[in-house]
Length: 82
Image 1 (cartoon, rainbow, N blue to C red):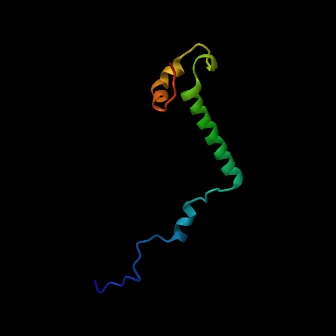
Image 2: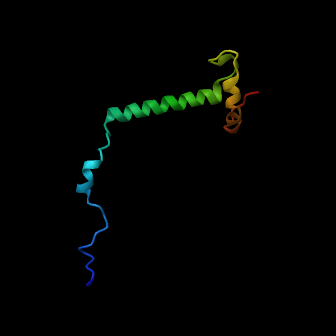
Image 3: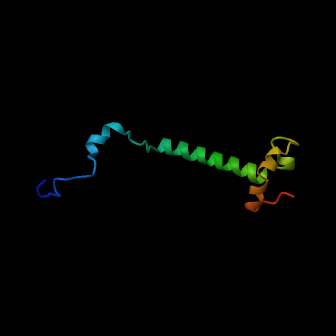
């Protein structure tokens, strides 16, 4: 066995050996703007269905399935619905 030499032993992987298996992350302004726009759209869509979709402003007319599906979430978030 012999004496251990901590300088020669390494449990950390070499970044040069793993570079071929990973892809760089695209952090361009266009990509960031696209992700931001998609996130804002989905957040506003969720806000509409939870907080606003009822009665006269419903996208689905007199159908109340969406209203009943998010009914408890609406009260939990403080939106009145009755």
